[in-house]
Image 1 (cartoon, one colour):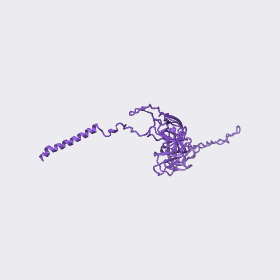
Image 2 (tube, helix red, strand yellow):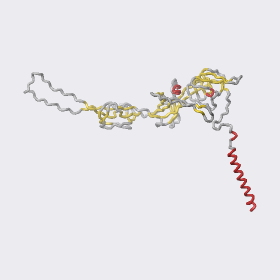
Image 3 (spheres, rainbow, N blue to C red):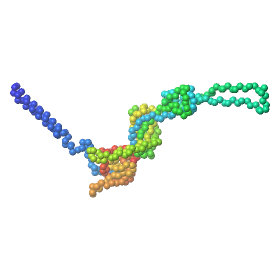
Image 4 (cartoon, helix red, strand yellow):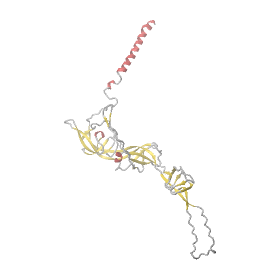
Length: 359
């Protein structure tokens, strides 16, 4: 036992400490995953053939525009005073339901009495002894005219601050009559608004209170009366990792909104965030190419073919149509069966998504 304590146990402890030291050295100077050091950990690459070809073929294409939106209460109707006077009676107040034409309050204003004419005696016929003294007429009591202020719309009264026997001036705001309905409002960029100009609006909204999307009743596009000046363009920045120039995003100035009235049976509250999907239509048996094969926006674009003799890429100008999920319609510039590069030079393979639109 004495031998174990003197020789064996110290050797075991030395081995344990040695293993710990080796593990620390490996962790410090040989980190895990060193075999993948050649790859950029911030921008993992995707294995794809930059010269892969795709055949232009006819197919069916559909497109939709998905917009973030918010539920907002519909604007109410302002109730203004039609007469100047004194409020004598208030029948309805804040929170009360009112029908069109129903009386809300009463106003009175004084009416000037008609002047009393004195009898006139012709000249030369006055007999002062026979003329009885004429007493001045007594001032008549003040007469008032009463006018009822009625509702100009149906809804709920809000914002009323007038009181009985208070003064009211013609044109003053008395209250607001809220219809109690809601609409889903989605801001549109100029590009999105342009894509909806010639489209019969057919939109649905996904609400958290319904299992299926709710159809928007009579959707419409409204425009702002005044457009804010766009902010000064930002200077391009350089990616600190790749050294490439970053182009500032240009979403455009939102000057229009898509308005979708909410059905009465749908349960919503103001400020609820939802998504609105606008059906942009469908195309049948049209030539399409992947979105990664196209460079350009609007109706003008460029695809690339491969010269088998030299191995060089050749640009081909094309006319674009509807954009769908990962595909875009080509209306001119390509023939069925023609082969083009699946990935245009400068387009990442993983950048496969595209926002729906007519072009």
